[in-house]
Amino acid sequence: MSTLHNSLFHVTNFLQEKKKTFTTISDKIWAKPELHFKERYAASVMEEALKAEGFTVKKNIASLGTAIMGSFGSGPTVIAFLGEYDALPLLSQEGGKAEYSPVEENGNGHGCGHNLLGTGAFAAAVAAKEYVEKTNAPFTIRFYGCPAEENGSGKAHMAKHGVFNDVDTAISWHPMTNNAIWNITTLANYAATFKFTGKSAHAAAAPHLGRSALDAVELMNVGVNYLREHVIQEARIHYAVVNSGGTSPNVVQPYAEVSYLIRAPKKQQVMDIHKRVQKIAQGAALMTETTFEEHFEGAASDLIPNTTLAKVMQQQFDEAPSLQFSEEDFAFAEQIYQTLNDESKALAYMNMSPEQKELIGNKRLCEHVSPLSQEMMLYGSTDVGDVSWKTPTVQCTTSCFALGTPLHTWQVVAVGNTPIGHKGMLYAADIMARTAIACMENPKIIEEAKEELKTRLKDEEYVSLIPET
Image (cartoon, rainbow, N blue to C red; front, side, top):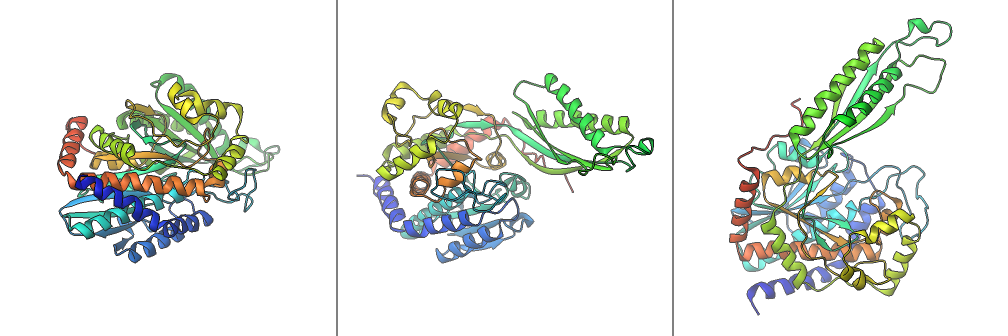
């Protein structure tokens, strides 16, 4: 057996021996869900855990109060693990319960599994650190605690500030319903809020004295709706009225706000559409004789995949001990599955091959590993995209939820602190740590991955979509 296989066999055992440590961290973060840039408790939990494992910790990375970095080793080659820990609003839910049951009415919840994501990446960093410590390998292992992936794009701010400039390879994952390499590109995005100001007046006695900010918001939304026909097919323009100006219909609303999220495959396409949206806002203000201010909310670059690293990570999937669930896990997953609508149930199996369907049978959890797929577009966005412009980046997904479970739902929260989520998390940590060790034992992999990134970028320099303040 080769040195590589000996090393990797140790990783699995190491992670299982420390299973209680990692699941406790994940459950702590799950139990106190915090929104973007407010993840103070989660960051403090990760800081304490990093120090306990011998990492040197820096806080306030890129001037973000909930961004942290743990570092171990002094080697010239840096391998980074990317963790997240922000939650979502209005998704509070009791764990282990297969019916909607919020812990706190209108409370937050980890509806995207970031309690698992951050802890799994941390566990992988700990395993890689253990390898460096035992072998004196000339590498530096880093864990980045990255805030605000859901809203605010923490990693984009970090990339803009050069945080990843000296990183040679970045590794991450996402809890999902399958075990696979995330061999994808994603949409770049830009988010902004348009805040309109008009003049208040009595809507019946003196409507002519009023200038309605709410009218301006509605006219802007109509204008953007017409714009949707005249942008590229892959583009997406989402909106939410975040302030309608009040609840009284007999008052001309002097303030109103609407938030827009613009997505497209390339950053320049996003900015071109953004300029057109700005013109619509100007038109709405002219029509209503109001004024507006635009406030930046967040932005993310498109994700650059890396085939070199994807193949290495796929090999780790093929060689690692497989993910195995218990009868209790399958029973709870069946209960969760039955809460899904027919469309979600159908989507669970839509992209599976006949062989995959046969492997799963009538079970609602996936244990098998998908083969490496062709690159595809995921019509969503992630701030991991900004990291991928800076350094070769690879991600995997592992089975943490019942088949068909959509992200950003209470069903994700319900499973996030159960053995199903824990097992998927540790499996992801195993695959990520193995990938890092494979790179450390064959450094040519990293050089090839860097050359691939250069080829993909075609000399295009990284430009952050975050405006200068």
